[in-house]
Image (cartoon, rainbow, N blue to C red; front, side):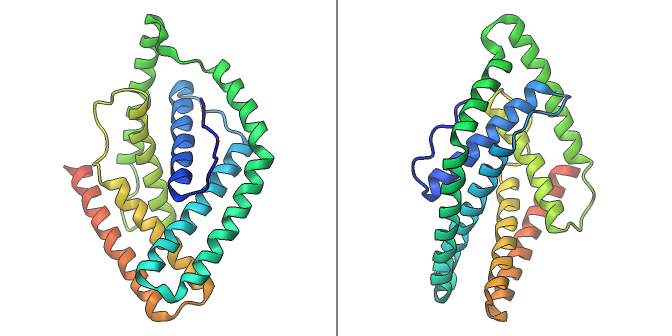
Length: 226
């Protein structure tokens, strides 16, 4: 249940922090299935703010490699997102610590007894089947960016369930990574558009997004219909 303190706001630290929140959410989802897992606005807000900072870091990384004349604007965006995350973290840290203690009591680790292990195995099996059904029944392409993100969320949660139990099957290893890159490029394109980037640069990002999406969908279709 511990998320560990977010002491530094480096790209790797922010990534690990968000990943721990995702794993926590999957644990709660496994535990409460088929009911919806508990949520809390403080944790949700912190997760979103951390996500915006992570995206700003990814934008800066891409800009430094491919469009260094936009580096100043990208660095400014990183600083702005860092300030906002710091404010939210400071304001919500104690609330979230109290929340995690409450959840630890309500949803104790079940594998400390034989009865708990049986309960957990049943929960994991039913939950994974539901995730697979959600994935395989997903509408056929073409997808809009929101749908692609929704599909990645389903598949990523399925992958992260492997943190809590051995899984008989998971999606293709590279699929969620490719879908994540599509999402990152889409958000980069949105940011560059707001910033007033030249059309040539926007077209480069858009084409890269389309090429990555094509790779992801090819892998998705091979697995879905294979």
